[in-house]
Image (cartoon, rainbow, N blue to C red; front, side, top):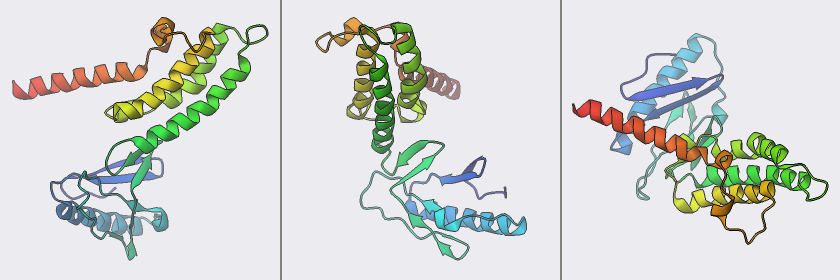
Length: 213
C-alpha cells in the first residue's frame, strides 16, 4: 500500500480494501480522500493491480441531513455514493444507526431458529443439550457477530435480537409462551453483547484515565 495522506486510514483484508477519514467538515474529508484515491490508483497501476472500479463506492457518514457528499474519483471513474457499506459482514449505514445490519442479522437468525423448531418436540424431538448446541452454533453467531461495533444501536433495534434469543430459550427449555423471560434465563444464553460492552467500557475508561494522568 502507498503512504496515505494525513488523517486517512486504511484496512485491508484479503482483496477488500477500505479507506476512511474523519473530519469536522465534509469538504476537508473529501479533499483528503481524493488525495488518497489518487495515490491508490497510481500504486495499483505501478504494480499492475486491478481494482474493480464499478464496485468501488463511497459513503458520507454524518448525522446532518443538510451535508451533501462531494465528488470522488478513482482514476477517471466517478465513485457512486451509497447510504451504507458492508465490510467483513458488518453493515455501516450513513447515520450509524445499525438498523440495516440488525435487520439482516435478525432475518438470518430466524431462518436458523426454524431449524431448532423442527428439531424440538416433547415426545420425539432433540433434548435440551442438543438444542442448546444447535442454538450456540447456528443462531447465536448471527445475533452477536460484530457486536462490539454496533452495541451502541438504539434499544428498539437491539430488542429485535433479544426477541429472537427469547424465542430460542423457549424452544430449548420447552417453556410456554406465558412463561416470564426472567424465569427462563440460563447462564449459557446470557448475551455476549453485554460482555463485549463491559470489556469495551472498561478499556475506554482505562485509556481515558491513562490519558489524563
